[in-house]
Image (cartoon, rainbow, N blue to C red):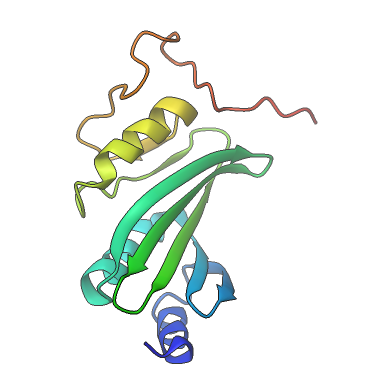
Length: 146
């Protein structure tokens, strides 16, 4: 896979959806994208570019809720990260579970720990901590001081 050609193609295809682009090294790229573009971008990487979903990771920062979706093209060794930033109030993004069932459990975990709502997820029930803390309490949320 030609990095420059691949990157140029992705930048052109999603020009209005990419907020920021970072090339960490020859094999690792991060695209910060508009949250509403997540499903379509993930679909292109998986269906058209033959990347597979690895995992997603979420965190709460001063800027909002961040989710990094990690994809790999095993034949080339490339790793692509799609990064979305969600607002502190009502953090919501489309679920990728319709695209791949592998996203179901990690979206449940992120929902449970951070309170992010995944629109279209078939079963956002507690995964790892049922009964460990009150409903509506999200242990990985931070209380940022002004």
